[in-house]
Length: 193
Image (cartoon, rainbow, N blue to C red; front, side, top):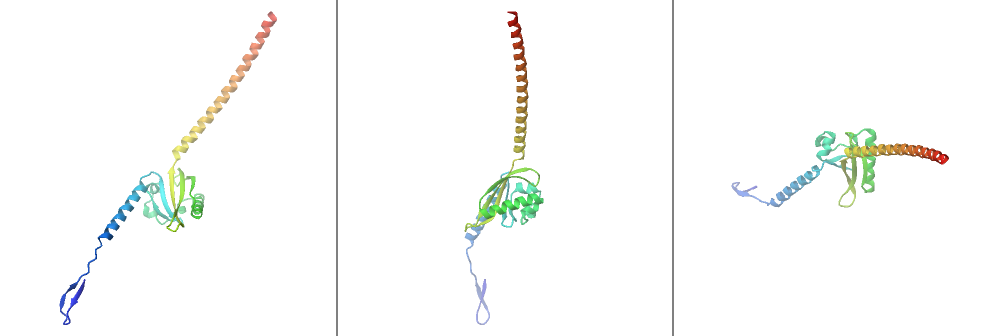
């Protein structure tokens, strides 16, 4: 609003300019709802999801990621991902992410997480509107129980194979002994005849 004043200094009124910003408010509301929807989708799976920039700084993470590290998003956002791990794990992650950022090709690996659990992880390149890779999205599924079951199944299979081999050897020995005894008896019968 702007005051309109006569030459003698008396106030005539105010000049008010109105602008319809309802379209802007609707767009802001739509954007906020879209962000909430995307965050809900990100938080829905039990898989770990995070987004990092070219320097490895965490830009976004879902609830599963926060639970894996036991930290709130405010403490993870902006931190370099590999700073959260021991040296060997950190170097592995940094090399993997840098390779995906450079090549633009997704990579999938089995990986031991911060908590010692096993993850099937895929690192995806994220491109900007010009097609340049600017970020990496990491999706990691906890496969600890699956790997433990596979190991137990392999171990049971190996034990069964060992038992079958031992039993087969025992049967072959028994068969040889019986064959020898039958041969002796047959020779005895032949002598009697």
